[in-house]
Every structure is written in C-alpha cells, then in structure tokens.
Amino acid sequence: MKILFAGQNYRITGGSDRVFIDEMTLLEKFGHEVAPFCAKHPDNFRTEWASYFPEASSFENPGIKDAVNYVYSSDAKRKITKILDKFSPDIAHCHIYYGKLTSSILGEIKRRGIPLVQTLHEYKIVCPVYTIQSNGVTCNECAGFKFYNVIKNRCNRGSIVRSTLSCFESYMSKMLGSIDSFGHFIAVSNFLRQTVIDMGVPEDKITTIHNYTDASLFVPNYTAGDYFLFFGRLEKNKGIWPMIEAFRRMPQVQLVIVGSGSEEVSMRSYIHQTNIKNIKMLGFMTGDTLSEIIRGALCVVVPSICHETFGLTITEAFAYGKPVIASRIGGIPEVISPGEDGLLVEPGDVGDLVDAVDYMTNNIPRSVEMGRAGRNNVERKFNCKIHYEKLMQVYAKCKE
Image (cartoon, rainbow, N blue to C red; front, top):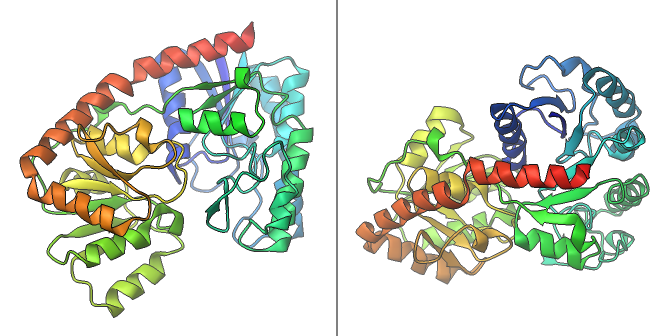
C-alpha cells in the first residue's frame, strides 16, 4: 500500500512528531511505501520528497502574510497537487496538518477519491486553541462547533486578535472539510475520543488506537537511581510549578529536570533566588545523553495539569524499566496501572505529589518492581504489532 503522511514537522519537536516519524517507520517495516508531506524547515530529516514541502508560516514573529497562510496556504495547495501526481497514494493519513499545511490540502485529496484518515493528538477539531482549556480552566464552550466562544473568552493567550484568528481558522477549516472530508479519525486515548464525541464529532467516525513504544529499542535498567526525573516541555500546563514546590518541601530528595520551554528562564531564576539545592536543570537533551539520564533515575515524574491525550513520556520511561508518578488527568490513567507500574496523583496537588515521591523513596524494592512491571506492560499493551493491526483495520474501513 502507498500511504501519504501529512503533518507539520518532519523533525522531532514533541511527542506528536515522534509518533508521526515512528508510525512511518513502522509501516515501512511491514512493507508499505510511505511518503511524507510536511512544511519546509532547515532541520528536517532528509527525504527524497523534500522538494514537495511547502513554505511554513512563522509562529514566533507572525506578520499579516503569516496570519493568512495560517488559515489557508496556497503554497501547500500547490505542493499537495504535485506530490499526489508523483506518488499516487492509496490513502492519505494526516496528523497535525493545520497551522503549517492548513486545510487547503484536503480538497485536492478528496477530489481524487483518496481515502483520508487523521490521527488526533489534541482537541483542535473541537477547540480552536487545541487544549479544551480557557485561561487555564477546563472549558467545553465550543462544543457543537461554536467556535465564536474563543473570542468571547479570549482563549488564545488572552489576546482578542489571536483569539479571533483562531476562531476564523477553525470555521475555515471546518468549511474546507476538517471533519467531513475524513473517512475516519484515530484518537490516541479513549479520553480524547469521548471528549471530541461529546463536543460534536460523530461517534462512528472515530476509533481509539493508543500510541506505541517499541520496547526493543530501549535497554532497561532495573537498578534504582538516586534522583527523580522530569523530561519534557517546560510549560505551565505540564505542572512544573507544583512539582518544584513539592521538591522544595523535600530537600533530601533530588530532582533532575530535562527540557526547554517558555517557563525555563523563570524556573531557573526561582530555583536560584530561593536557593533550592536539590533541583538541577540540565536544559534540552536528546539521544543517548537523555537515554542515560532516564536509565539512571529512580522514578519519572509527569505532573501535568492539562488534559494530556496520552503520555508518551510514560511509556518511554516504562521501556527503560522506570516507574512513573503522574497526574490523574486526560488519557494518562489509560497508560498507568496504579500500584502496579506507577502512582497517580491529583493534578496540581502538591501534597499528593509529596506523598507519592515519599512512597517511592522509602520503598525502593517496590519501586524497582514497578519499573519491571512498566516494561512488561509496554511490551504487552503498547507494542508495534497491536498498533499496526489496528491501523490496518482503520485503513480498510476507510477504503470500503
């Protein structure tokens, strides 16, 4: 089968990009021919299809042209026509295509009768700001595609201009087929699936397929480390501030933080000013360096206060043989088996997090057992074979 994979990035900037790349690799492993269609970027992985990639809007310092291209990219429309002519896919599988590719690509795919599938990594098709949160509070006011509420509540960074653009883009995307053009959607968790159904997506158009982690690529270490670890984006919605407060209260317990993000400078400043000695920030790391840091930990902490749709860092930690303390929110409870391979805490509850860290610290043999169970659960529940089989079932359904 020939499959076109459409997404914003052909490089790793976050969990959804890793899923995009890994899923392409998985399909190729099973004998399919896969071509990427992503936005141009100097850091993209090499591919023979790079000449077909469209220019992307700037998200850092957007101008009027960027705002227009965020809603509708004429270049993406031209380039999708060219790659379809050259590759002639049997199916088109979109991931996060809006923003840089936009819904401008959908019409030509549909016109040619190519079945369309999308993997949902967030809540964009029902929430213009992707998060089902408004100013830090859970919100479903856009249910039923009432996107105008994003302007009323100034959901995009409190800005009326940004919120208006998000609203307009969502209505434009829906008009161009962000729901109707797709034969099926894939949700990465049951929580995500039920949320978008509750907010207007037809129930029969969406199936849950959890993300997978190829445990064979990870070398586990069942020796207990002497520090807790957070690795990921340093953003408020990741629960980094309650986590810092929890470890401030436990000066005898070490926390290592790996990652970068909008809160990094504030975090470093606060840790320095308050003279916190047991928290070390290492910045952004990847590859073998990050692997060794994870393997050396006692436990990984995932303290999110947002509705995570899955939690890829959890399955990666498990693959390394490490237990996880994570928030009971979004799709996370579908990944962790409390008391077996990790512990769940109430999101943002500093006391609850302190208790969980204290348990892991004072029950080292049990923590090691949880790490072993985590590795076993990844191999059993989140493996390549299960993921591939479910993916093929969705493709077959769309081609009927």
